[in-house]
Amino acid sequence: MADRIQPRDDVALMPGYHSPQVDVEVRLNTNESPLPPPESWRADLAAAIDRIGWHRYPDRAAAVLRERIGALHAVGPEQVFVANGSNEVLQTLCLTYGGAGRQVAVFEPTYALHSHIARLTGTGVATGERAADFTIDLAEVRRVLIEAQPAITYLCSPNNPTGLVETEATVREVLELAPGLVAVDEAYGQFAPWSALELLDEDVPLVVTRTFSKTWSMAAARLGYLVGPTWVVAELEKVVLPYHLDALKQAAGTLALDHVEEMERRVAAVVEERGRLELALRDLPCDVWPSGANFVLFRPQERAGAEVWQDLLDQSVLIRDCSSWPRLDGCLRVTIGTPDEDDRFLAALRRSLTPPTAPRNVE
Ligand code: PMP
Image 1 (spheres, helix red, strand yellow):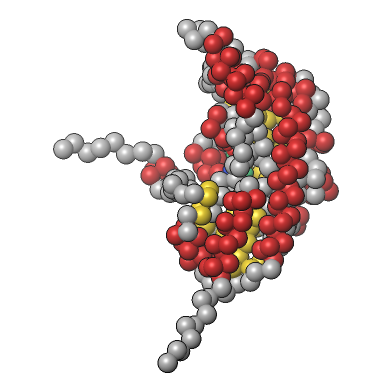
Image 2 (cartoon, rainbow, N blue to C red; image 1 turned 135 degrees about the horizontal axis):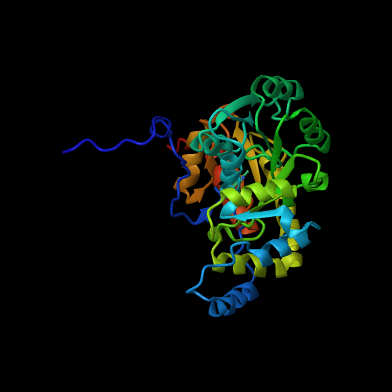
């Protein structure tokens, strides 16, 4: 048999993306919304499907969707870039501003796809470390940025997987220091008390990315966007494939924006539920990190994280095992679910962390 063609050397060495998709009763591993979109959204989408001219390419500019997203954030459509999930937004950013001989800067632990996507696009990755409490260490930022002169400096607020929200002062400082673009990934921005969207300006090299996968209950649709200066959006539009956003997705996103109030109520409910879950976790032998997102990072103190993860899975509760990730020794991450799902998780966790009392000797 002839030798098979091999991928690029750097791709051959890559581990790929591993987040097990297991069939379980309680799924709290990928930070989705616990609830499906509102019923009326489904009905409206069914009607919209009927109106799609399927033999024609979709609106390449996604004009209506960008207009509506822009209105949501009080900016014009020319400041909005839309793509297939915020991961594709990040990929387009790297294809546009990264590439051979250029670098992005990331501060670990953070969202693994920031560095993974950079590498896929041939961009170098300069890695800095967060402080012991996982906040951004500005001295470290200064060191990495001076050394690497990155084209893109990533922040993630709230940060996945730690849940920490960057302060406005930190984002402003990083903007002062960064030689290129600062990209604030706000996939969980709606759950946090403030947003870097407030700092956007035509003269500020700042972009903010968001997604429909979490708050908008539309992870299945794969829709995300970036808000930034018009000069960035214009360059991204040159790089992304023509007609990359299909007509169905454009309709789905536009219709979702008819439900802003309902979604805001849901966000408030998730934030309240997060408070309850954090309190319950603090009652157990666990270290718990304060979260501004729809998930909580915790570390069982007396048992190995991977064992606890397996115990939960054995009880049909799937959470994220971060225990082997750099700097996250023994850590686990749980998505906020419905109160019922969270109760199932807590009960399973209590069983895992509380050793069964030794059977009494009955003679
Ligand atoms: N950024 C962060 C921080 C995330 O956690 C995720 C999803 N896990 C994404 C981006 C990607 O989201 P999507 O591609 O679904 O929009």
